[in-house]
Length: 360
Figure 1 (tube, rainbow, N blue to C red):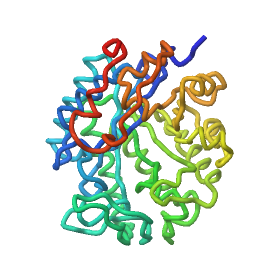
Figure 2: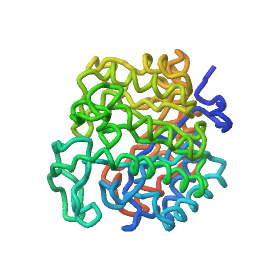
Figure 3: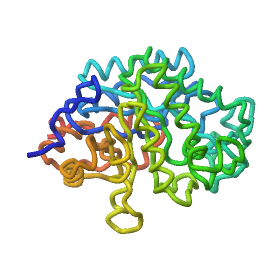
Figure 4: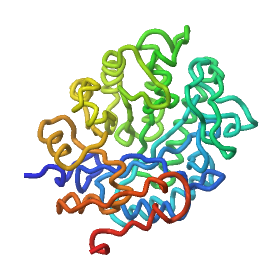
């Protein structure tokens, strides 16, 4: 019997199935970081997922790393997101907002007053930033002073309160993919010599403070955390991800959070290019676990059956298949997405993919 389509209680939130729309940046907000009216259509079309996790949304102007990404730090942004949550709830869905600060993965052209991006340490990322002037090399970021960190924590908590007012069902703290909180966690990017650097406990300190503050601002059961233990995205690296993220999972566990969201590419695990850590992290975290990373229906069913996860995140397949949950239920063919429309643009490649019934 299929578990993917069984109901699940995420704390006090009943989910219709165990399918999660994983967060995906689509670069369709306006220049002020307000989600567009198209976003309301886009997410409502995908409300068949048991849970939607929105695209990453910056908690402050300093958190911006890409053009046309949404935020959750102004009244206008909050109001724009309210249109999205109303549409999703009208379609019977549940939606969390992902809270984001990119850290060093930015450029002065994207920062207030042309300031340098910030990071745990003054180490530039390899690669280039996406800006309105094209792709430009990442600069050496400014190391955050320890006196600035309480304000950063407060920004996350304030963003969570705005998300609650905007009608979201909860929030997900983005601590993955080489962005700011991940930069603090990894010893490849965190070379600090104060209480936020050095040992694993020190490097995890900021994430734990953020999680505690966000949980206090709303409720622990409405807060998730996303990690990507073995990702090298955005030039991120750690000398011992098993030890680092094992500690993170154990330290987060007593907080009573809604879930731990683990990104671990299943194709890389099968190919043997990375060791599998998700089962160990699930054992270390006493709570709901979401896994994501290229799952198809069979892999999702296996993960649920083997007890490796409670919920399964699907990303790219949701782009061209707004009714992915129903397609998976019927074991129907999946439409292919046009990669040229993934980032930026208008309705094309965003809200114009037909549902299965319409396509038929």
